[in-house]
Image (cartoon, rainbow, N blue to C red; front, side):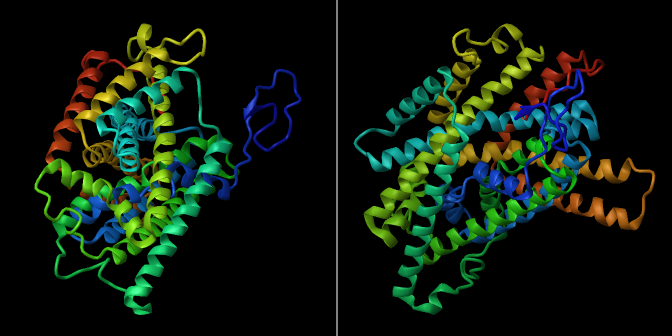
Length: 470
């Protein structure tokens, strides 16, 4: 994308003119990019756990998480408008509040980068084991770890064309699933069966605590929308389009995912039956991991079950490979700039020009994490780091546009502070509903980052380089 044109598409013909990124991406381009990053099947692997945690209110948990994400997307868009460069929570919080607070936000994002490959290895192994049960789950974990690591060590990358093919296949299979589920409900309960308030509110099982726990998990559906802001340097009218794209991506994802889960709930209204009669914790977890595949088998038989399992497996493999690559590149950026030891983390392979030490480190950590954690635990750890960063961006937006401004009026308060404050509160409620184990592991990670920052800056007395975590 580097070229010799100005930001307005006019060639830079003057001697010595520096190459710039072209501002060619439209609002539609950004929305499609955001949907590809999030994936159109993002809610389906979460279905069983969200359904069980919410006591039958998985749709409501997805829509509540959407509210938090839309408000946070406004803050992300506004910060991208103020700093229309390839940005991140780290950059926004560091510039709007303080570099040290920005580092803490970045450290929480770093946690996401590390746990995404773990999550993908876990789910790829679950999907593969569901399709080929004669190979143990533990063996699949090892096979996928080796596969992801080997591909990344050889400089393999997932091309944009592959992503487009993948999203088309995913969309077709999801439409097939939704059509089969609607047909199943129609055949069983008639047209009236397609319109039920129970997936949104069931008075017999409703619990605010249960809904809060499920929402803290269902929020994983939207993780990745903030990647839109990393394209700010290549967007037409970034001050308008980045904000709109972030908000619309969250809205479209929420409505699309909610529709999938709504039909799944109508097709399988008894949320307790997935784990009924299972006393072993591992068996209960596996039943919830594969719950959406059980629904697919009920409404569409073996063909739909296999098709959905295959698509979910493909999506998870693609995310796992790029997730490991992204984590290794992030470590390389920090190592190259001397934030962490350069000799190890700043090393590049002579043959493939890739950060091979980092890829191996991430691979080993991902393999260990996949054996130690289950899908739900890993998803909640990702949300722990993500929502810390989201809260930071909401505070940064309010500070940048209102508290730093010389003109403070009721109108600017309502326009800038109120949405950011509501976004912060929604994110806080979701965050504090994460389980205790998540806080122990995530809190330990954050404490390690703060200690490292204190040592690196000699008791917070010295500044440190700003790293672009995107």
